Length: 189
Image (cartoon, helix red, strand yellow):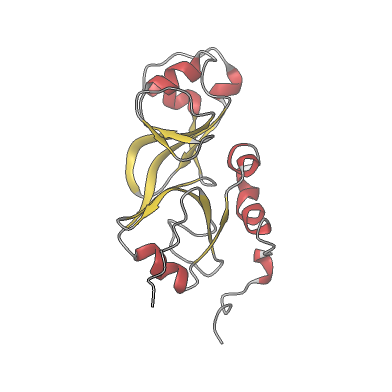
């Protein structure tokens, strides 16, 4: 019998099921930037911090005179390395340290993207997060089997434009799932 290739979920949304009570992930949508046999890495995209991009830029001693940039929320990307910044962006562009997720989406950790954004020369669309979510080898696969998560296609409008308080339900709706109908008992026969 042939071994089936594992299914990896890079460039997908990971949607917390309603009964996932872990405070780090309750009602979250995570954008998976990497998923392979050594584990998974993603950024939570619907947990705005009490921090604006303007405040973050100021902390990094980067000046911006653009109110629409300064007002952007910064997100809690996950519990790992909360001091590390990540920028999910489209288009890819050419930055110092970018993980290419798809032809359209990259995740950059170098300061140059924030400097360019501050003076209006950054990528067309971006989301800035501090910290990330990580899973060890096989851990995410186990959690999916345990019905902790739904996975589905990512969507640029949800990722970059939809108000963050609507992203959880909207990501599930892409799969035809209404999370309000799922109780904590779902998935148990």
